[in-house]
Image (cartoon, rainbow, N blue to C red):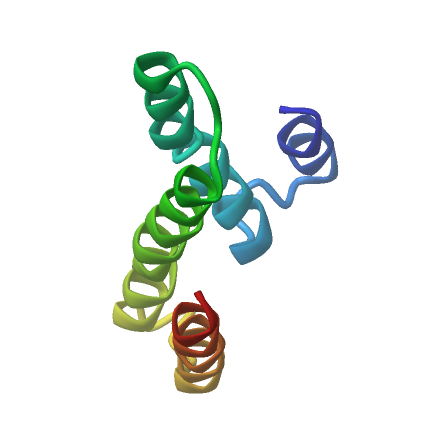
Length: 90
């Protein structure tokens, strides 16, 4: 929330980084629900958080690619390449 507040003050609340931080914060519900039901956080819970964050954050690039004003193919390709490497390493 602090990062979002700083972005709003600077007028960059719609930047890619800020939107990804927002998705990462929302996706924290997955490991927290896992921890609430099992009683502990495990590496599987953190992997679930990473996978959820990668999946939902990809929408940022998809939506920005569809808008003429923010259409850029290269950042999306880089993001999905890095996401693929992270998934393979899990």
